[in-house]
Length: 197
Ligand code: ZN
Image (tube, rainbow, N blue to C red; front, side, top):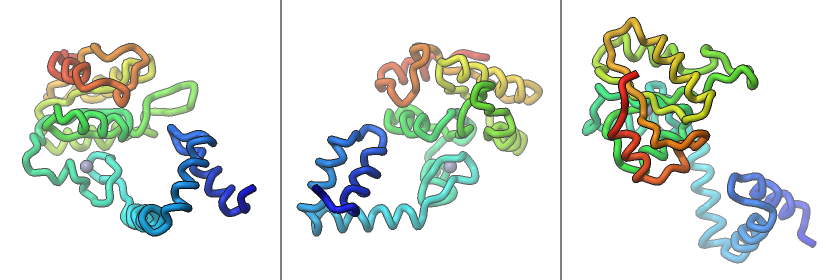
């Protein structure tokens, strides 16, 4: 029915998380109908983000600035570093507004199955951050999956010779539950009741 160009757009949108073919078709129709008020501003926003997109060289967050907005925020407690697997976890904690420290994004979790090794993650950059001084506590906020916990143990071991205090989110966090899906109340509990490793 639609032209190849419109079909291609629909297929690309259908691959986005949370969208399927049906939602993608609805989105495309909306974009075509609202060309001036939706399609054009959306294109500008996409181009703008694409042009400036970068990874924070301090914490691994994705942002349009380096250092990222979190690392630049002077009101934050830089002695408190929360270590997360993915940017999505950082964003989940930020949305909750519960944490006033800074972050370190590992970029994944150790996995023999997927061939993810310690050197594939931001573990050494975390160790250098700790070695630079000024950090008093590292909060491990890995997911409560087997791989998440294996990663947490590895990081704790790696930092064991330093004087930094290492704690872990209290699991309130359901097994297999990813941080991004937790409600704020559960996150608040997990953060408040964190335990020494
Ligand atoms: Zn940052």
